[in-house]
Image (cartoon, one colour):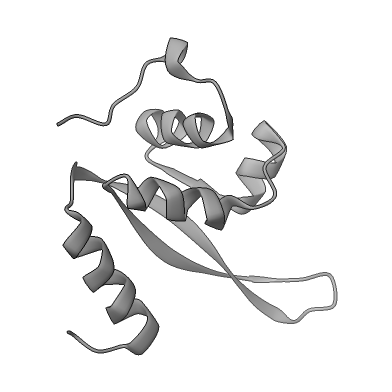
Length: 100
């Protein structure tokens, strides 16, 4: 089953992010805000993962205006799709740091 969408299929914020990931390979929160007005990117990524897309979160370190180091995420679309079981296994590993 393919989860690829065309530009004509872009109808809402979720499909905007999905199309962006297909075209660009990755997205950050700042890109989502600037390009699509999306402020809750992590919720959309969660939905796309639930659909079966394999999206990896990569931490990004940067400095804020006060010089403090902050962490944000870059979401990277990986090739192929996954099963619901693999999604929950990934979520468990992310939340606990352990393999199930």
